[in-house]
Length: 260
Length: 265
Image 1 (cartoon, rainbow over the protein chains, first blue to last red):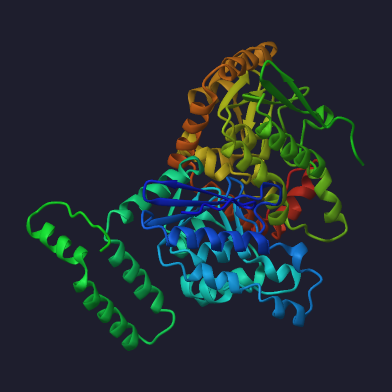
Image 2: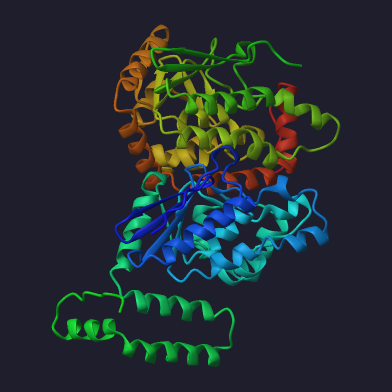
């Protein structure tokens, strides 16, 4: 398989886990268009790699990502920014089929917060700060912030965060239900790997269909969603993993899922 | 007006000594001193060559707390200052930094530690105290609420019973009684305070700094995890107290060097 070399991110594989690290240390991992394209390429590479079952997306101690690259955007007009369609890359991040765990330390602001929310699980270090400060520079979130934050923590808290632009701490994010877990900064990646390994042991077919069904919540009515879930449930009965999983359960032994 | 060398920082043998240096004002805090202290704490936290810190005061006092003279100005103009904001911007970041910084911090209490000065000493990990030193929860004397973490730290260090007694009475607590209450680590003759503090800090600086830092983090989690929330709450309560007639009278009486007459409002 072709392994690409990247300028703005670093990738690494550890057993069944693919790790993407945002790496623009001089600008607190500001999300330039080039970085986003590299991120999409790396995610697709892991998505297509049968050995990889879970992806971890992380940044540095100081910053997951401090936001979009404002320098790139400051001179744009409505027409020029529309034509560039810079959010097309974001849609591709969203379409990643394997589960993505965001391991967030330091700043996750603006696009950084939106990127974390595009992931499926968020583990934060005690030093993490989440926020949508776009209002401070005269714009609003543009990569899903108003939609995902509101769905994650409700209208009232989302309004406060987006209208004041004031960031929240990791413990506030935990209380609000924005993150799954808060851990000491030094153990952030280890904790993310623990969760990744636990998920990697499950049937990758079932994991994929479960993720798909959960994400469907945001696009459908409950009755359509239930139908979608049921179809995915039925579909799994054509997999070897379903046979193995249920057999192992009855034989009281751990299952060995192959992804077939 | 800026004063010369209002805060001194000296680094030697992996120890940083931070000295509050307004001796003629008993090292009471004006804006400049609080902001310089914030900066000095940030710098020593970042400086990897510093592995323990001493906080002390120049001259007769450790710190008399808030400089009431610097606050009286706005009183004379008839405007009541926002004490809540002042505390949020000035004292709370200092207290938080001292507690959260993962390096041992020793307070060398060379003389009186009153009000926010007492809070400062209590936020440190160790208190080495001159036999002539004293502690005062002076806040209620001028119609205020104990702030800068005092309502949080003092009951945790000596229990609610004694804490409330000290807060209501606003009376001096001498060094020996402070030792008996478990408020301080050691009482030594006045002239030996810095020597003792330096010995302790140098010993700490040779220790396993990482493990010390993690120990402090665990104690913070166990005992001080609500610190930020309580500091914020104290600031709100001080905002209320700052609008009271009793505070206006308290400061006026202090400036006029007479006994205050409180109305209870």
